[in-house]
Length: 109
Image 1 (cartoon, rainbow, N blue to C red):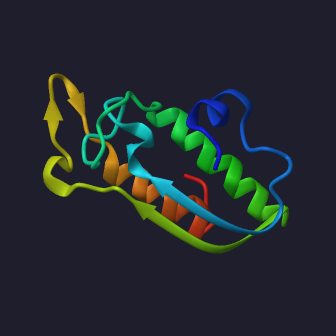
Image 2 (tube, helix red, strand yellow):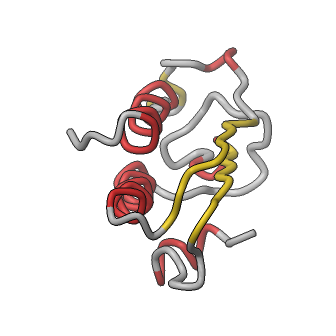
């Protein structure tokens, strides 16, 4: 497992290669850009940081450094999907779209 702070600070480790299973917990963006997740006990990373990480993974897949063998997205709580709370907007659906675009369909927007 790679911590969110290490991903933001260093990007995807060079040691990751070959067949790769990617598991994304939506609480990685809790309070920062995700309100529709199960665990809201910490402040997560911002939308642009999540997008950058997904683009790095996508680039590695395009360069055949990693081969996606499986993917899961967990910890979604639909109660606050697309809501705004205390001036913060939920970007869960936008992040899910980016996951599909960058990792499944391999296209950049």
